[in-house]
Length: 152
Image (tube, rainbow, N blue to C red; front, side, top):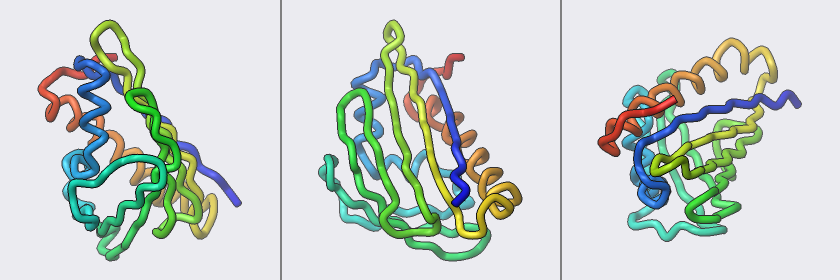
C-alpha cells in the first residue's frame, strides 16, 4: 500500500492557547475548509473533544457526496492532537496537529499520512493535488479568522 505524506506549517501571530482553542472547536473546521468541498460537521455541537471522540462529516469531492468519520486518538492540549479516519474515502488517514509557542506566536504544523484506493497513480493524479489546495486554503483562512497575519 502506497502511503502519501502531506506536511504543512504556518506561524500565526496569536498565543498558543488561543490557536489550540480554535482547533478544539470542531465546528471551526468548516471555516477553514474550502467552500468547493461543501464540508459540513454532522455531529451535534458542542462536541466534547478528547481521546475517543468521534466526529461525522459530509462533503462533496469532485461532485461526489462523501461521508467521513474521524476519531481523536491523541489529545494533548495545547500542544498536539491526532485524528484518524474511521470511515471515509481513504484507506488510511492519520492527521497529527502540532502547536508550538514562538514568542507570543504559534507555529501550527500538520502531518498527514494517508493512503488512497488506486494507490500511487490516483494519489499523484488527484489526491495529492487536492490536499495541497485544501491546506493552502487553510493557511490563508486561519490567519484571516484569527485576525492576525501569518508569519514565515
